[in-house]
Amino acid sequence: MGWKRPKQPILGTVFSGKVIAVGSLATDFQVGDRLFGCTPGLGFGCHAEYVAVPIKAAMAKCPVHASDAESVSLVFGGTTALFFLNKASSKIGSTLLVYGASGAVGCMAVQIAKRMGFRVTACASDMHREAVLSLGPDAFLSYTNKELVDCSTRFDVVFDAVGKMPAAERRRLLSDKGIFLTVGGSSVAKETREQLEQLRQWFEEGTLKPIIDSTYRLQDITAAHARVDTKHKVGSVVVLMDDRS
Image 1 (cartoon, rainbow, N blue to C red):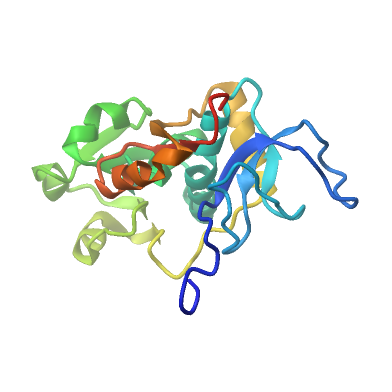
Image 2 (cartoon, rainbow, N blue to C red):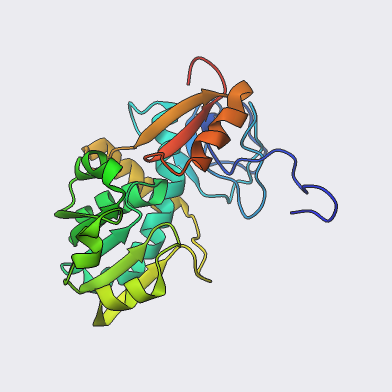
């Protein structure tokens, strides 16, 4: 996103790892704490063995008994799902459709929406039916066969978790006073420490599980991107910095 070259050559916005040093004003965390979170704005820098994070950034202590891979896979999808679903909190108890339920955001949205009290219908490719149903939705619709086309239900909330839902589909499936949410609109998710602490609590209670599609070593980062580009992953692709992750 720079003028002639990337402004930040090290990509990656989410992390999980151990604190090795703190600044003089950093009093919330100590050396040795295991934290998960994200760098703010367009800071990036997480595809590396070390990253310096401002103390005001969204970060919190990792869930107890969670590996770094499990912790980091909660961050992007979990905070994004929470940000958008909180906009529909007035509709809790109503019907909700998650479009793109097999992605990093979608997998978290299905689980979080159920935890919040929605009646959830998950929509994804038929090849991911079993994986998505394991997340506990009330119903499943495939958009690669006629299930979505033939659906006559109109939902109180429609959440497009991939930003690719056709406008005609949205109008057909949304109730007259329904709420449409999309990651592909002008509203950009904002990550907070409170979101991370909520995700940690649900993980520790056993009501939210991280979904890891695959893991790659840092030296195989090209293969990790290629896996994402197939559009066939379920949940998160995780990049590991060392054998202890």
